[in-house]
Each structure stands twice: as C-alpha cells, then as structure tokens.
Image (cartoon, rainbow, N blue to C red; front, side, top):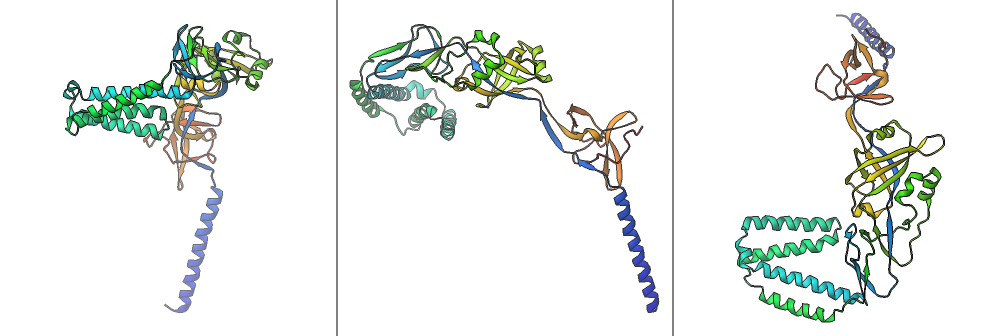
Length: 403
C-alpha cells in the first residue's frame, strides 16, 4: 500500500470520526432533558408555637430571720398545715443535721451488710451484676451532671461492695467502722440545734420553689375572656417577683397551656380532637408529654389568629422550670422517595414518572404516601416496575398525556 492510499484512508477516517462526534453532539443538544435524582425524604406535619403555662398559684412568703431548710421538693404534694421549711439560725446547724442523717444512714448500711441474713441470701454472680450496674449508673450521673443523684448512687454502690467484701472474706466485721461513725454522729448531734421557726402550708396543693414573677397575672378562670391584646401583653410583660417570696403552692395537678397560632388546616382539625390525647414535646426536654385540646377559637378581628388552649394533667420539675415554652405538637411523619409534582405522568391510567438511563427512557409507577404543595412522596420498594432510589426522573421532555 503506497503512501497516497494511506493518506486518503486517514482523511476518510478523520472525516468519519468528525461526523460521528458531531452527530452525537447535535443529538445530545436536541435531546437535552431536565432530570432530578430520586432521593429519600422525610416530612413531618408537626406544628410548633410559643405558649405559656397558666395555673392557679399562691406565693409563699417568709419575712423572718434565719436560714431555711425545705422539707419538700418541686412537684411534691402539700397538705394543709404541713411543714414546708424549717428555719435555723445559721447554715452550720443545717450542715450538722445533714451530717447526722448521712452518717446514721451509712452506719445502718454497715450493720445491714454484716447481718448474716443479708450475706446468706445473696448470690455472688447476682451481686456482681448489681455492682457493675450501680457503677455504670454512678458514671452516667457524673457525666450527665446529675450531681444530686451521685450521693445516692455512691451510697448504694458502697453498700453492695461491703456485702461483696463479706462474701469474699476480705472483711468479716465492720465494728471499727461503726464505732468511728458513732463518735462522729455524737459530735455533730451536740452541735445541732432545734429550728427557731417553721413555714407552714396554709392550704393543700403542689410545691414549686422557683418563682418567675408572673404569679397572679392570670388565673385559669381568666382564659375564657382573653383577647388578642391581653395575650400579647402577657407575653411581653415584665416579671415582678413578690418580696420575701420563698416558693409557691399550685392549686391542683393540672394546668392550662395557651398560645397564639395561625389558622391552618392542621390546627383546625384539632377542634375535632377535643378530649382526645395529643403527643407534645417542649423545647426544654426530650420527653414526650400527653395533653389534650381544651379549645381553639379566633382571637383577632379578621380571624387569622387563633387562641389555642391545651390541658396538661402532668406535673414534674421540667414543667415547672419555665413559664414560657416552645411546644411542638407531634402529628404524622412520612418517609419516601421525593417526586416533583410536575414530573408525574399517566400511562394506561397508571400514575408514574419517566426515568432515563443513558438513552433508554422507562415509565416507572409510583405509590404516593404523602402529597406536598410541589412534590409527592412515593413508597420505597425494590420492585423494578416502581420508581427506585437514585433513579433519574425526567422532569421535562415527555408529553404530559401519554395514554
């Protein structure tokens, strides 16, 4: 083959390659289609708003001298004329009293641990499991900053270790420890003094140590007559803590939670759920609480704003911490493959979308589990006839009516 022939063949081959590349480029430009990848998406219909707790409360006041030692904890029940707090001359007397209680409890643990009836009824493996569990509980309390629980966890762990020492014969007698504790208890007891005064509950109810200055601004009976302006003023009011206030008594276990909401279909539906339970979550806690709808009514002139009143029949330290809370009403949650509404087509009366892989276009069915404004969610499946995760959905480039 001479050089001329080779040159001619090279020119022909180059022209052929250019024609192929050019045709593919023209085809791709003409066939430019908008696509969207099928991804997994989660949507919830939870609704949030800011609100405030309304309770019937009475402030506890004490104007005398001395240091208070409370006999009750937050959310604990008070009966009429029960002792809320003892008053001592100084903090040292309270400290001595606490030390006597602490050391007496430790002494009782030593006596209980060395009691033959205790050690004889305990199995070694069970005891070791309890020791490990109590140790992990102590570590978690420290890590979580629950220092109020650390002492009780350490006390229980010490008691279990004492029993273990007896079972393993490392220790058979705590007489010396008990004798030393008796001396310390006697020393602290001699330094203790009787309280100089007491603070009594004038009525029954539930105790709360924290005051926020909103006590008395609104009561439960005022809710029916609330106006939009009144609610707004409550939310922006400056708190005013009563002088000499040391706590408050809450009349009853239940409370109301009020807030202003926009008119939405989901909230309107709540009117049909009155007396039914709702699951709610507050911003200050991960715990889910149960509440019910008391009422929802328009509260401004154009009825674009509604007053929502929820019934809360639970009471704990978390619910007493804050007067105002951001609350989330938990409705339904949906997870599925997200499909642009504009990509939906019908083929032979079946709803679906077109997908593209290379140059191949395929119709895939969808099973709608949720409908949004501009998208739907279809159930996730492994069926090849349905839209699959990461398929390329054709948003444009096919006729809307493919019947």
